[in-house]
Length: 263
Ligand code: B12
Ligand code: SF4
Ligand code: SF4
Image (cartoon, rainbow, N blue to C red; front, side, top):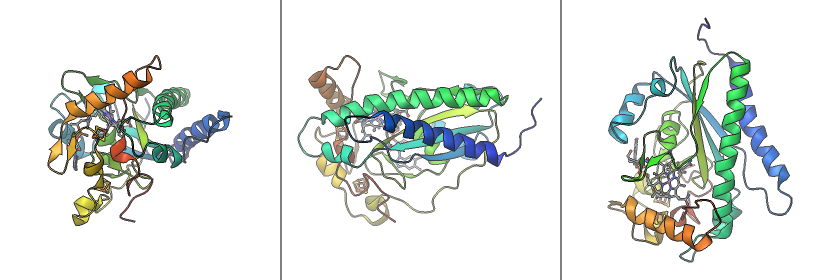
């Protein structure tokens, strides 16, 4: 029986796996630019009092870490920030840039690879790890997932929510999140004190709402169905043989795209 206790060497190794797997994937890129900057990694305790809030914030059906894995101790949360050239390519126009589409597909694949490596590493050390894909784990009728990576990343201290719904990290919003559950006890990340969104902190900016191309995002709220219509419009326009339901105009060319605008 493994007694739960913090293990800094293992925490470092987990972060290393995430960063090295991303770096190795960047190095394979022979034609284009490197897609990702250095990932951010943080951990949340399965016992954090905010975990039960997931059922209020997202949906009563949202899972708790213990529903994913018996004996869960922690959630490993990470963020893969894009090279700023990727959101830059997605500015303007109604349709998403091809770079944005390809980076979405490639990042989802990379998250699967990272999760598999984390699972193998933890298994070799005698721990369990339960993984979930980056997306398409949502209920198509309500467009809500019962495992929300960004709410878990919020609990782990990786950022705060912006007006555009994105979690604004210290490396911005143009990137993707992964998370997995383990029975290894990991040191929880500290949550930021203030808001990272200029609109929420000071009532300024609001550019994301002005730039929404399908009337889905306004300063009064968000219509997820209008947003998904736009994502499907991009999927149809590209037709690349795998679902590329993207848009992301509200995170391209924004003050929060590649950095925390409050720092
Ligand atoms: C379903 C889904 C969609 C749906 C619905 C969108 C939505 N906002 O939920 C559709 C298909 C429309 C969609 C669109 C997009 N998505 Co999407 N999507 C998801 C998915 C699968 C689940 C999200 C979910 O269930 N949310 C639950 C609802 C209730 O939460 P919410 O809408 O985010 O709203 C909350 C916050 O805004 C919040 N809020 C505001 N202030 C505060 C303050 C506090 C303290 C808290 C707790 C909450 C909070 O209030 C709401 C309730 O909590 C996740 C992957 C995953 N499994 O986590 C990706 C994900 C959210 N999508 C992502 C992205 C990037 C996009 C797009 C840009 C498309 C693209 N890739 O080009 C657009 C952006 C739309 C937008 N502006 O919100 C990323 C977000 C990255 C980031 N930096 O945050 C995610 C996390 C995928 C990933 N693995 O990285 N998506
Ligand atoms: S564009 Fe401005 S208002 Fe919108 S989320 Fe980013 S900082 Fe907040
Ligand atoms: S992803 Fe596109 S449609 Fe959805 S809120 Fe952002 S700009 Fe609007």
